[in-house]
Image (tube, rainbow, N blue to C red):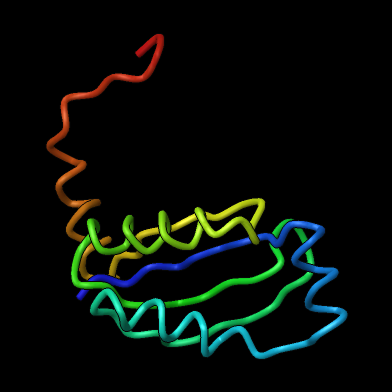
Length: 108
């Protein structure tokens, strides 16, 4: 299965709701991921540009896109991003393949 890093930001309304009624949203995230055949590996809140991050596996990109669409359409998030992750071996293979790519930078 493929790994993904999700980043999200809550709407002001969702933050007000969480302040009024704090809850562990990781179980909701776990249920959503598992309903599409994936596995949740972690869920964190953060400071900065995004309010939270989550690491999960999905059977394929279509499943990851379906999850992002389902969660994004819920209205509680102002930003949702899905970042596909590669293993180190996949990254090394990509660099090796890049050596054969036909590309010249500007002015080159």
